Amino acid sequence: ADRDTLRVDDQDWSTLLLEAHPARHADQTLRALVERGSSARTLLALSTLPSPVRNTRTVRLEVGAAPVERTWVARVHLRPTERIASCKIDGVEVRSTVRLLTTHGDGVAVAGPFGGPFGGLGATPPPLAGPIAEVDLPRGAAAHQVDLVLEQVIMVEV
Image 1: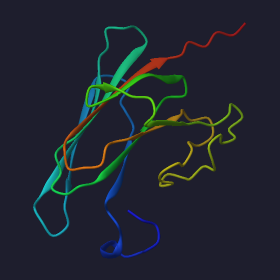
Image 2 (image 1 turned 90 degrees about the vertical axis):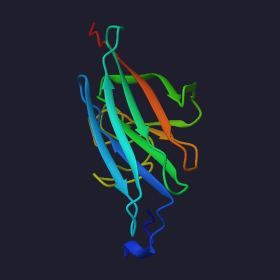
Image 3 (image 1 turned 30 degrees about the vertical axis):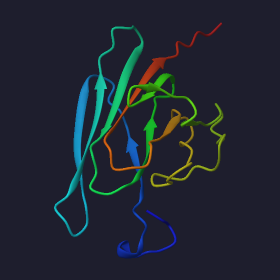
């Protein structure tokens, strides 16, 4: 929703952010977005899937078919020692629609100021937190599936 107006009825809801905090182990969270003034809903699922590859996990975000056209941006919060090994949207490998927002080791934001817990699009993570991957989904009413393979970076001190 936009930031230019305070009343919910006056806001533009054509673009929505999904803040995702994946579980460490296999898990699934289900939610439904109910359209205002209607019983129509969009089903949302966030799953952490076991991986056969050591030190990796797959995070799957499913956005069900919607009653209205909409743009979705998924903000996936990674752990400090994780990085994205791959990203697929609807089964197609992508790189150009993923932005990685990080902080320096000293806690200074790389991509902009820390936006707090509701900072919105482009807000960087708090000091010492892991990076945030922003993934743009195609505009429309069709269902989408995002699969992020997260890789644990092994830190070795010399």
